[in-house]
Each structure stands twice: as C-alpha cells, then as structure tokens.
Image (cartoon, rainbow over all chains, first blue to last red; front, side):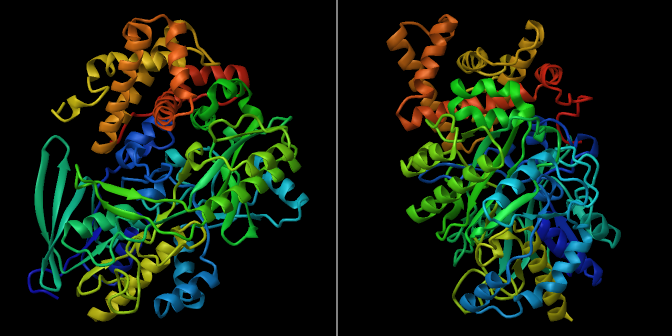
Length: 487
Length: 152
C-alpha cells in the first residue's frame, strides 16, 4: 500500500461497484465510491419514460451499439447504475457456463460451488424471490402457450420480493420493492463509513509504474460548475459497466485485451394481441421465460407502457397505429439470442469520454434469432393470440403460425429488424493465463498491482442469462480476495 | 448553449428545436390514433418536439453529424420535389413525403425516420394529456401526479 493513501476508489455504483464497496467497508477498508450520474430523488422514481430517460439513463438512453444493424442499448447512469432501471430478473449463471469459463480461461475458484456463497449473499441483500401471487395475465399467456407446445417455462426470480406491479421498472421502482443498489447495498456501505459521491466522473487513473496512485475526477457540483479533482488512491476498482470501463482504462493508457471482446444479448420483440383483456400495461412485465428450446435462445416478456408500445409499433406505424386503442388486449414478448461473436468498445473519436461500441451479428446468430422468434410466435398463437406485430420493417400482421414460418423462411434482412439489448458484458475479460484477456483471475488488470475491474466487463463470456447476479457474485469474490491479499 | 450544440438540428430550446424538426414531429403526430382536445394536443406536441430535440442532442457527435446530414438531405429532397420548404407545405403533402422516406426501400432514410418517429411517439404517448385519453378509452391507469422532470 502506498504511503500516501489507503483509500480504495470504486468507480461506479451499480451492481459491481456497490458489491465491492460494501464488501470492502465490512472489512474496515476506507472506501470512496465515485458515480458519474446523479442521486435521483425518490419522488422522481416511477415517473414517465421521458422524465426517466433524463434522470436515470446514460446520455438519455441514446447509446446505440453500431453494426450491420444498430442495436438499441441503454444503461443506467445514476446512483445505483442500471439496477435502478432494470427489471430485477435474477439468474445464477448455469454451472456449465461457469465450468466452461474456468476451463477456457484458466480461472480458479469460479465454479458453481465456489460462487454459491457469493450468490447467496447477493440474493439475501437484494431480497430475491419468485412471484408468489396469482400470475399476471401476460405471464399466464406465455406459460400456457409454451406448455401446450411441450416446453417447460420457468417463472424467474426477481430482486423484488415485495413487488406490487406498478409496471414502472424501467423508470425506477417508486415503492422501493425492487432492490436496486440505491435501496439495498449502497445505504449499507454508507452506514459502514463508505463515501458515495454522485456527479463525479473519473476521467483517468493516474499510474506510477505498476501502481495506481490517484484518479482524476470531474465533479459537476450543483451551481458550482465543473471542477477537476485528483483523489489519491491505494487501489482502484473500476465498475463502470461493459462500455464505460474499457473507455476509462484506455484513457488511462491501458490497452492490452481491453475493449476487444464485447458481448451482448440481442432481442427481437413482438406485440401480441389477445381476444380478452390482458392488461399487460398495468401489471408487472411477463415473468416467465422459455429456455429449453436451445441453450443459446431465450424467450420472455417485454416491458409495456403506452409510449413503449408505440415505439414497438413504429416500424410499420401506418398499419400498426390502430392497435394503440386496444392496449388493454396487447402484451409484448421477445426472442433473445446469446451470440458467439464479439464486438469492440473504443473511445468515441469526437468525444473521448463516450464509448463507441460496435457489434456485428453473424449469420449463425441471425439464424438462431429467427428460429427463436418463430418458436415465440408459435407459442403465442398456441396461447390464444389472434395476431402478432413484429418489430421488423415491412412485416405486417402475422395471423397464424404459418405466416410466421413464411416470414422466417423469407430471411428478412437484419437491417429491417429493430433489435435491442440491455445486456452487455465481457469487454475486459478475466483470464488466468498470463498475457491473455485483460484481467487476471482476481480481476486485476494484467501488469498492474492495484487496479481491478469488477463489473459486467470482467465476465469472461456470456453468462447466458441476466448478468446482475453473476456480476455481484464475481465482484464480491474479487473484493474478498483483495482484502485477503492486503491482510 | 454551447457552440457545439448549435451545430446540430433541434439546437434551439427557445423554439423547441429547429423549425424543420418541429414540422416533422407535427407531421408524425398528425395521424396519431389517440388525440386529446386541441389545446392539450398542442401541449403534447410541444412536449414531444422538445423531447426529440433533447434526445438528439444526447447522441454521440458522429451520430449527430450523420443525423444532421440526413435531415439536410431531406430538406434538399423536399425542395426539389415540392419546390418549397417542408414547413410551408400542407399537411397531406408533408405526410406523403415523410411516408416516402419512412417506408421506402432505402435503409438510411428509413432508419432516420424510424428514430424520429420512435422518439416522437414515445413522448406523445407518455404525455399526461394522451394518457388521460387512453385511460378514459381503454381503462389504463392515468398518471396520478406529475413527477419531477429530472434528478433532485
């Protein structure tokens, strides 16, 4: 530890940063958390989508991933990060995924049994539970259709045990039932002495040989204008997410293995119309998922509000707009795919503080996406849907499974699809082999003694599921190993 | 307002965005299936125009330039085929031109208007006035109070 500072700087306050902060604070480490976004007033939680975009989202949600087709991507930029605006879905990474990571990346202590206590810790902190009341109609529909076709849909646990279904997950949970980091771990870290500073963007990590000695922070204080501060650091944990973490490391002069392996889970959505009211817009989003079709395909439900419905119908608005008046009969679902390829993250050429992310779906990814989408359509028709409207330009109403099959076999170009994702990961992967990946098995940047990464970017590959649980488990593991090392 | 902001479309908050952008938003909403009373519709349209301008300003610089180029192309195209500025055309003519770019075979114009339409519709259908109409007509819950528009 350097003579000048024993403070550990944690960059970012989302799932990874909050897990690191509380773990270190519990061990008596002096911690300061620097969050680029603001501390959003609780009264602003649960507002309209436009207000939420301004308050919670990085660059107001205008952060597409560029490629053969732009993929809409959003992430949080506020105290609590993306945990404030996600759905709270909770999955442990499948054991076979973890064993593959361990084998291919020479990682120790990352198997299902190794991570189990960390998952349990995170699940307790986030009050993870399965919905225990009557299933919402939009969930029932997916379960009904999937079961009819021989699948075994699962009701996914969420970090929202006391959810009352306000249907505002994407705008911040107004009741606090969803245990985002601002409601769960960060207050605990602050109670243990950690300082959590908002409006503080770390522009650069100052290195001296193999060690970080400080971070340069741009602080946007209310009414005081922006100022640059240098904060001395005994160690740095970078937890800015899969896009911002590589940009910060690159801005700090680090290159090797950084930003070359971005992974995403692209999704194609569809709006389904049912003969009876389903009221998806006024209940929690569909809680069921179908995962037994293919290990790399997931079918599930999407968030629906009047504004989001209009966006999903916008590809073919002339034909689709009349559906707005039937919102009570509509629900939204998606087919997602776990691609095999990798994208990249670099600083934007014209604004070096922003990430420029690129991802190109290859033909195999597209084939699996189409296969998943077709099965989703078949499931929804089996559930009683009378018509579907996919988010694909030029594809009108699908009235039966045969029409869906004809569209899929027609091979609509990817440029016609409105793809979205909320999962990005793997841009600074851990790899136990010297000279491979960006980080060692403890999450330390290769070649440095005290710079760590503990967020989605550190994951060695796709977790195959919503990554929040694995981010928290791996981050806690990295923080514990740090504490063990410094004694 | 910084110099950089002034180079992008919709950069003048005093009029809710550039006149072209405002006219496009009005055109995109001219066939909206849910419409409140005229005064409230105007408020919803104003909110949508301001929202679209703010969202476009939040794009990365390279994407903003591409957007500006696309809108400049649209402006020139309209001049060539209609002989007048888009803002001075009657509503039917505006809608035909917007539809031609929105639903044509060329990918870039379609993606430009996909973006503008998505932002416009998101703001419009999330506005209190429109949600009130939806609530009346479809029993969806209206927003009970106006939440603060931003942090703090």
